[in-house]
Length: 483
Image (spheres, rainbow, N blue to C red):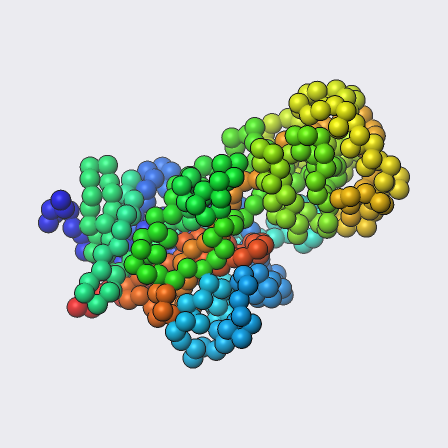
């Protein structure tokens, strides 16, 4: 039972200490509110997944998002919905059922696009630095804007600002359930600490991530094969879906594709953060049976790695091998595409490579022979989609189709990592959580991965912007609960 001294009253209670939660806490504290931040980790490990991300930002300058920003989000903003309802959702006056539909609200997307430069400027004002820096993708594409020092730098800047403003941090504290008054307004939450349960009173911001670290929710929503997935970094294991669950329990509207996630190809042998393997367009991908199963290079890797990684996830054991010959070693800066800390498996023949990676030697030899026969023999243009495709091969390879013939041969194992889950809560442009009938739930906000947005394919370099923008807006629009 919770005693009187266990209850703590604040103007705003923020569940989560990543970029979204800290943005909410700082913006609210700047407005004079008394704020608490609840973090399930220790102070040394605070920041969750935010502290591990490079935090790519889909912006063409410090003042503007990319030209395709809103279009790409809208094109991947819903499942199969009545087109009339999608059109009606763009009307700000539309209320009720349409507002609660599981789709990306056009007004939400518009707010994200227009508020992103303001959020960047706000963070720059605190001392965060941003620059256009090279990525891990081997293409001629322009560098991405990202914070210097990645997500960890943003966590440090925001946390320092929060501490200077008097925000109270409660570590090893996990939000468990929301508290409602008789009108259905959120007036606080119950949290678990090592010594027991504690009640926090005040409006709530849920910014505690998705559910990629929760095996039960992953199996329930993504499916039983999700046992072959793992979070992209150790911080992802802190994201166990409590924020989404507790809001759904009080009737919140859902948004985003609950059965899907942002996929990234990683080396399953490695324990480092984001041990990505983006070299696969220059070789062939084979499953444990030694057979190809997808087009390895439908276009540049930055635009297509997610769809290819999903095909890897579908293979036996959820993994595949990329097989390369010595030609890839001559690609300028090819090691940029390899974040794994594990070396490749190397052999002087395909037969020896097959034995080393435990793939049937006869099947791998046949696969390589059929692939080589379908190649023209021309040399690739490694840093652009060159259209050098196979002929008469199924599945085809659309770019960089060169024979695998030059020893030594290299192989890296690849599995799909779960960067974050797509399913979450529906919020309005003020970051207020909506209930299933379309109205805002008084006293409840959400930001970051707890907010559902994506369907089908992730719009790259937008998740951190979403956290910054709607975390900040949640803090700006929050106010103490009224009696």
